Each structure stands twice: as structure tokens, then as C-alpha cells.
Image (cartoon, rainbow, N blue to C red; front, side, top):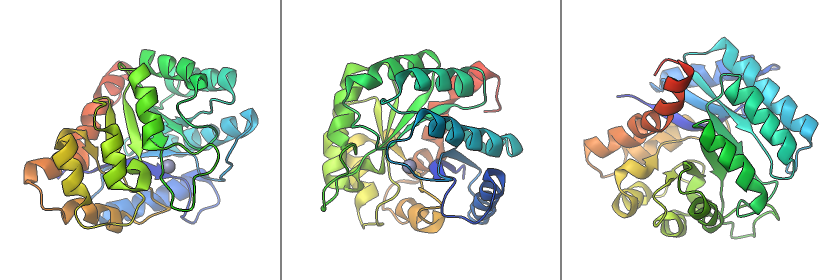
Length: 261
Ligand SMILES: [Zn+2]
């Protein structure tokens, strides 16, 4: 079965360099039959990265994926607080480099108009956008997006493709928030493996809009894969979620870049 992971980071594993960390992630991935991983930032974590920090994080990923071009897809880390830098990073890492997606974290909530030029440029480059979302019982960080925030952004950009990172960490509310936006895909990673969550996402969104991701090294591959392998869904749905959907999302940019699909 084809398994592609939509969401990993250069954190939570040992290794002094980005490529050592990615090598370790792939060692674990090999044990579980995961063929490819999408990877973004994580050597350090900064809520509101400076332009220099954004460039450094992207340099780390460029350096790491260079060692594993057939296994890892780089996602460029951007921030709506630094639009000019982010546009330049999109060109440097996606247009002129090997990266195929965008990663947005918690610098600012994603319904901000500051993201519009970045989303438009990502669409031109056929890059998918992975936006972290959460619904925390203890309250979100000031710049931390909810699935509702992402739905707002997605309605302004129907031509863009978004991945709802963690689906808010709350499948009932997260899935409901994005259900009406056909250009948002639900990412199963990062929350506890609750019984029924994958079944719920498949029932409400259709299996075509659900993606397996792990958030490794912050979460284990095994606990996140179990959400899909343990789900009471048809085998055809399991195949879509584990790899086929992500492959379908990335195929346009991989083809445009002449990369192996
Ligand atoms: Zn993430």
C-alpha cells in the first residue's frame, strides 16, 4: 500500500544537522512502510519568526531534502508578518528550488489579508498550503488559527489547495468547519487517536478529502497510522487517505518541476 505522510518536521528526533534528523525520521518511516514524507521547519520553534529565522529554517529543509530527493518533499516556511521575505522565499525554495508546498504555523491567524499575496503566488507555482490549526481547550496562542479561520481564507481563494493541519485537533468541530470548502483537505495528525475520528472525516468529507499525516517527530508514525489502519472504512478509502490523495495533490507541481511522481 502506498503511504505518503503529509506532515513531518525536523524536530523530535536526534541529530545535530538537518540531514541527520531527516535520516532518522526516514529510518522510522522505513519500519512502517512509509515511502515519502512532506517535511518543513523544526530545528528550532519560534512563534513569530524573523525574516532571518524563516530563511534559516528553509535553508535547513533545503539541506535535508537534498540528501533524500526521492523520499522527502520540502515545504517552505512562510509568515504573513513578513510578506516580502515570504514571497522571496517562495521563489527561492519552490520556483527555483525543489520544494513543493507551503507551511504556515502560528505567526498570525490565517484569515488575515496579509496571507492573500502569498496564497496567490503559491497558486501560480501549484504549491499546496499546509496551515496549522488547533482548537485548544486552554485557549489558542494569539496567532494560532482555527479551522474556521482557514475556511475564511479558503473561501477567498477557491483556486488554492489547503491542508487543514491537525483538523483543529478536534475532529468533530474541525471537520464541520471545513466541510463546505472543497479546496480544504483534512489532516488527521497530531491529536490523540480517538476512536471514530477517521470514520467521521470520511463520512462528512468523503475519503478523497482526508489525508494521513503524522506530525513526526512530534508524534509517532505508529500512533498516527493507527488512526487509518484501525478505522472501520472500506479498503479503497484507506488507500486514498494513506497516499493516493496526497499523490494526487502533489502531482501537478511534481510534473511541472519534472520531479519523480
Ligand atoms: Zn506542523
